[in-house]
Image (cartoon, rainbow, N blue to C red; front, top):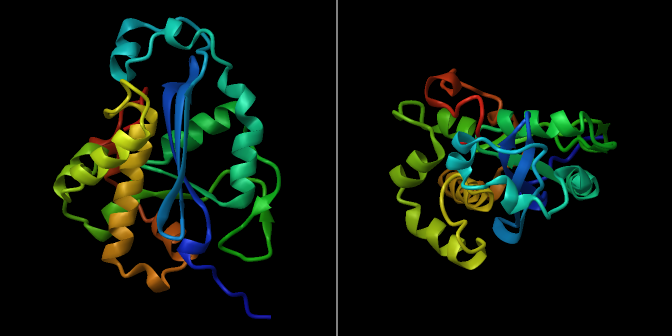
Length: 228
């Protein structure tokens, strides 16, 4: 029987950004859900760090240990993340960071759909939609593929600011704030899909293109500690 590939708009895409590090865990997550080519939901919260944060760590994302000390740790989000993976695919900007941090907490989810092979199941958080790799593939000669640089180059700042005003918590409307970065990722993905004529684009194509790295990730990518 011929397998019918789903269109990218038919599958929930959960664009995720983490602020944190393996040494102290996720201290903030932001999730933007895209479905039907539109933003349909956002989720975000602080998570208790596993240890006191050093000043240089807090300077990047603006979160101090005391800011998250009274919140549940990220470890309590298992059901949320497993549920999302069982209903759709994950995405991020330079997804290797989010995937590694997620796997450092839970190496594998439960059995989840393999959206590249309809009817099959996998035990993996991957494959991820990766906006950084998608832009590297589609626009191979750009000087930078950092999140902020791409938003600025394609004049998406206004769209991002409008989303941020509507959804970001007070004081968390800047880069290196989890929901703001996840919204930036969403704006980039929607812009790219519009540029490729997304009406007939399958989720399989998006996931395959998200693996076509052109070797730029190490050149101007995020550091070892923090997400871009």
